[in-house]
Length: 87
Image (cartoon, rainbow, N blue to C red; front, side):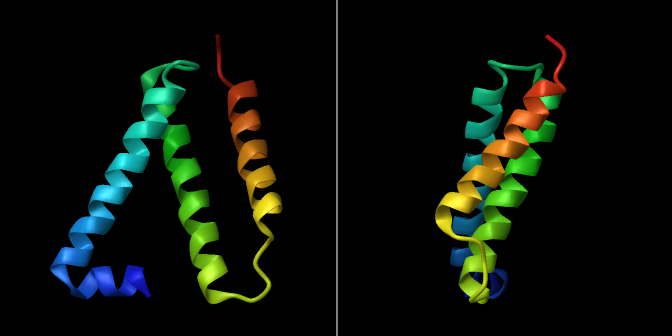
């Protein structure tokens, strides 16, 4: 509901924008310790999409993956990205 609410209520939209920017910024900062900044932005976008997507799926679907399964999938994506990052 919050995502829909944020599209119609400016204050909620502002909170969602802050959340999105903060999530991306935190991910890029930490990923930059492991890869170049350009790649960090790319991987952060993928991680953010997964995090937000699973959050929405849990809100809308009864058959969304369980918490530990979600964590495992996000970690698997990150491991895959790290394996394909040049040192």
